[in-house]
Length: 138
Image (cartoon, rainbow, N blue to C red; front, side, top):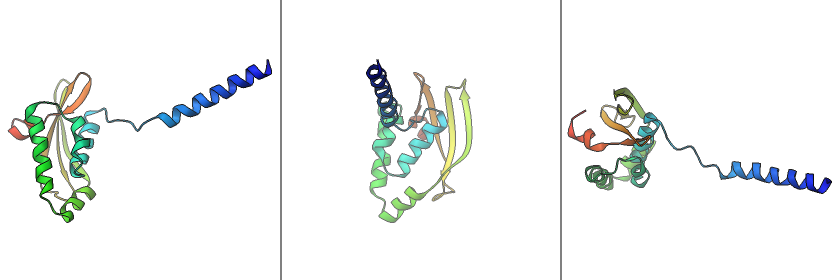
């Protein structure tokens, strides 16, 4: 009986310890978290990390490719400045019944450059919709 109880305790200890090691960092889930993660990835020139937050359509993929091309033309000093820049949220505007949010932001490197990013909630997940960001329909 003692061996059985000890075995159960050992199994429970390993199970509880293994669960913590297997946890991954929380993924962004709110509109603001997704916007910040997307913007941070762009500022860091990590387009592959920005892409999962993007609403997938041809126009958005073209805009993301444009980011990639424009960052490829920057020199190391500028790239480093963007990587070190803080994201400044100027305004958050919920647009439609908690399913669309527009975030006006800038960064500490180019503080005067105000940008907007539109987030849409689709299938319970917030995604960045760049086609409206660049069309002027915000």
